[in-house]
Image (tube, rainbow, N blue to C red; front, side, top):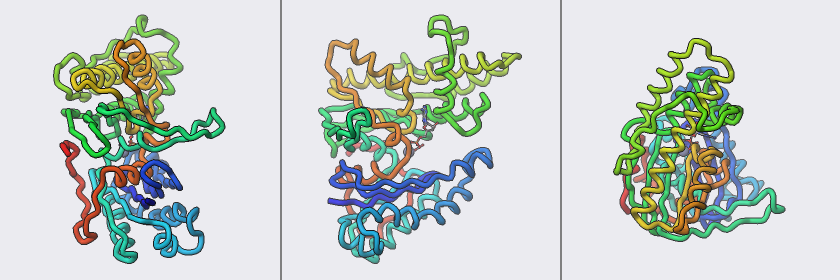
Length: 357
Ligand code: KG4
Ligand code: ZN
């Protein structure tokens, strides 16, 4: 079954064709990151205008590997369903994907499947990926359930119990800011503009000192709290206070602060996720969302799991499938989505992620 998936929930315009929820036939992404660099952040109006220009070229390119001649012939011949992100996200951006998908479904008579962007992130773990170091050998992702799924994106930090591809239960999430928001605001404070967590990771790698010798100590909010919720706004404030306290912000200082920010955020994410895994006797841990691209977070999970007596498998998509793209939108639609009448599809900016299905 081939699904044409469309994603426009934030500043990206993405389209993918995904076979049987696991195989990427094509995946195309247009980002307006350089425009946001210019305006100092995402300006919803600017993002939506750019998406309006990009959406049809991006869909055309995603389909071109199937049928170079015409979009409609391509869809009619090769596509079984259309999937589209309906929320959560920016209303102007969502509407572009939703209305485009609706028009395609209307014109072709194909079923249309609404997708929850945040839940969809975790389905990146079900997509087969090529190992560049093994002659492009395809790795099949077989997940042993129950799994604990941590979704860490720019706006969300959520934990789910996944009992199968079709059964998800929300366990907890952030009470205020997401881990990604903390990375992004800290990055801006440290002078990395809008390059976010990736810039903090890069600076942290240059830090020469070890954890034990780090002079800067930031809090690990709610790390020892029994609940499976998170809070990162206090950490954001602590970073700001630490920054203001320092008169001479040398490169060494910035790298050390970046290191400690990354340590604090990743410590909390690892401890909470493992607590959930223990509580629900999970057999696997799934990471997803842009922050899951962080190499230190992956390292910490790997080494923690190795040291545990219980066997827990770690799944983390390649970084290109952690950050926003349409491939996992197609995967979610295949495994978890339900087609609905195109009349009933609507953009829902505040779509709940606290599901039990
Ligand atoms: O999933 P995503 O691409 O978009 C949302 O749905 O929000 O996540 C974006 C978030 C941003 O906060 C960005 O700073 C963070 O992912 N991010 C990282 C890394 N790469 C992206 N955070 C830490 N380390 C990274 N390497
Ligand atoms: Zn996302």
